[in-house]
Length: 320
Image 1 (tube, rainbow, N blue to C red):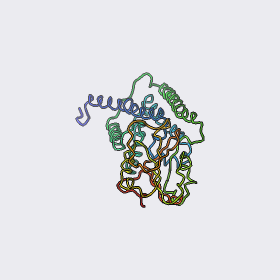
Image 2: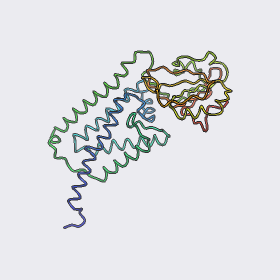
Image 3: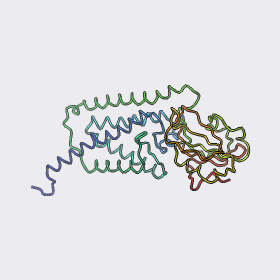
Image 4: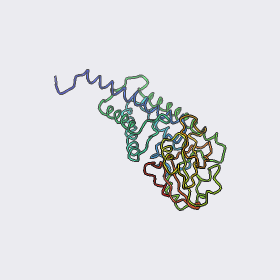
């Protein structure tokens, strides 16, 4: 007996572990993420890395289509893992490897959510650890070949095709149903690609400012701050608790952003400490994908500084 060869019982155990990973655990993990993104039907569930890349290749005005395509691709890989055993391990490695690359970019950019599981997303680091461990396990444990009746011959391909078709129908119908409900002239979603490009422009030429429902009459006069914020945003609350907003020297307008297309959240709201700030809001019915707080400094109606996710410890645009 060749002692260099592992015992047959060990091969059976590792084979079953590998098969369990690529035929059940990983596809279930990916299915849950795809299902939540399709059900939520919001481009907010995509990481900003993907939104930037999608906008660069022509999806800037149709982020819902980008969401539908990427979600359908995830479902397709799930179908392959479930019904085509010969390709299951490869499909799992490709999908998890892609997730890890996206997560690395998201972490390097300081993003707080990767959107991997839709509204249920965990922190990018947490998702990176989970996906990394799953990928490592798949590499270490080679799955045993399936002898299942439904995997033989063309049955697996047929099963995968039926699953993928059904998943695509569900994905596109769920996501585009939300668009059909929007009968206004507003966009279905709005995502600022580079707010720093606003510097030097009049606020009258910037779409986001046009969609605000009510501006103060003196918004074009002198130096002013405009802060787009969410009423449930911890960073926004910390920013508004700065001394400059208790002793207001620069006129400031707060623009509340609806947390969802259905409207504003009613729980988890913070008490606005800036009593002298003027307040307005963006309209309901749009997926506003804005990093809050978005602070814009303007002078005589011209943007002097604009920054998303403004840090309260060292704000860039509160210079006056």
